[in-house]
Length: 208
Ligand SMILES: Cc1cc2nc3c(=O)[nH]c(=O)nc-3n(C[C@H](O)[C@H](O)[C@H](O)COP(=O)(O)O)c2cc1C
Image 1 (cartoon, helix red, strand yellow):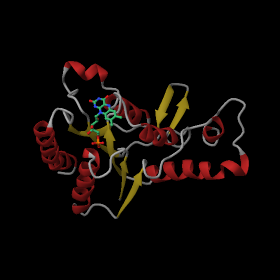
Image 2 (cartoon, rainbow, N blue to C red):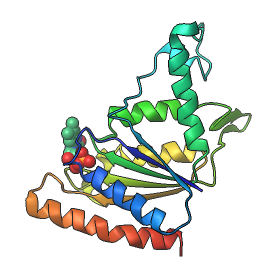
Image 3 (spheres, rainbow, N blue to C red):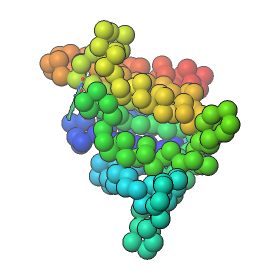
Image 4 (cartoon, helix red, strand yellow):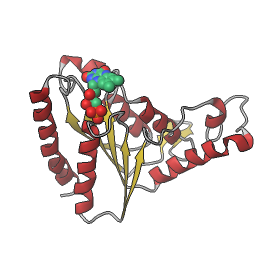
């Protein structure tokens, strides 16, 4: 059994999602269920945004060739990203909200993951996810409060991630939230502590 751990905050030691995702992975490995953890920091080792020749390496792009030798490294990254994902049973993703959505670094990783024939397939009945059976645990941090508030309509971070993984066939997507991070130090510390308390509750519900 393998965990795939992704961090995507532009902050390092001051990042809320990095502290929390690390703790989720620590508690998961303590269960003894996992043999390996693959870690990918998509800020430190940034994945380039798609260009037509890069995308042509794994999906139809009208009129585009895959770019030959010059793009061999990019195609290798596309293969590695999807292979790591497919080989993993549980994903732990640190996902900060930036401008109401995910970080562009996380988006670049997701763009390499959506590969027809590997993680989803187009059928006569519409697209079908090919990556079912995995569990995704997302640590979500944001400056304001969105969950179950009137601002939830502006949340294109959690909604996007849930729908993206559903598209790949993954229904089990759990969120651990630290909200109100920009609402002063007291609120921030309270919300981070609450998120730490949520971790074992979520893990116990997933693995009773
Ligand atoms: C570039 C940037 C954009 C942000 N955009 C939003 C936003 O749209 N809404 C929000 O509530 N907080 C926003 N924030 C606050 C972050 O979501 C918050 O600081 C969170 O803790 C980030 O996760 P991290 O601590 O792991 O970096 C933004 C922060 C940055 C740096």
